[in-house]
Image 1 (cartoon, helix red, strand yellow):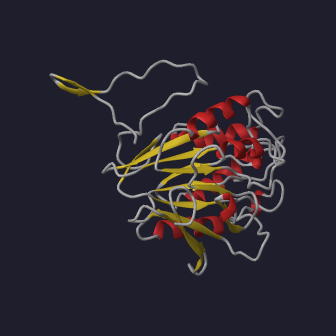
Image 2 (cartoon, one colour):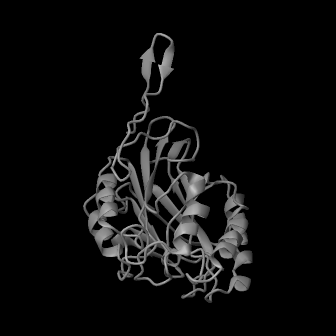
Length: 312
């Protein structure tokens, strides 16, 4: 369980100063002491969150064809959930824009405008379209493709508001009553380096009741540089659920403890309709995942897993 640290003094309790560490050093951090989701995670009355994925237009630089209405309707549905999830995770691909054009910013603005119908906190995953658009692409420091506008504007527009500066990060949550802990580990398979691999191994080793891993590509889309290496690390550690996108469909793959949520507005690749997923902790400690059709709100699939990701 995460410890909320303080030093008891005669005058009360104060928070120790954070140690100064190298930028890429791994540091075990406590769950943020603030109530509700925010920067770094937070203390929650219940664990309940939404998943939305793959919201890009069908064609390159087709900003006029951005699926704004679909994206807005999905997030409006999430906002209307009872009880409403206090935060959401997304699985990547918020744009389909060339790295040498001017459409990146306008497409992100359209996404963020449509997403604003949901009042909760959003934690986004990096997709291949936030690099060069190719599944094999790799962006960021020390990579083949370096700093594309797609990458840098994703960092500025979508990660900066939650206090993150890198496309891989962890959000730590704990129950207000101390009954459970959870970490949400965001893997950037299209910004993969040895530094991220070392960070991921240490982060996954943190003992928590639940571990949710977010990565854009599913296990079979392994031309993305970080898919196979991160899969090897995930196999070493406890895992409740791997949440991915990339394929424009919804699918549950129990053998990999994986759900694909890529039906958020991008052109569909199966007979699954657009929709979203609600993941919620149950009173018995299991995790229930429910996929919804965004037009009818019909339940597409519902399943329950134990904290180790297996059938209870």
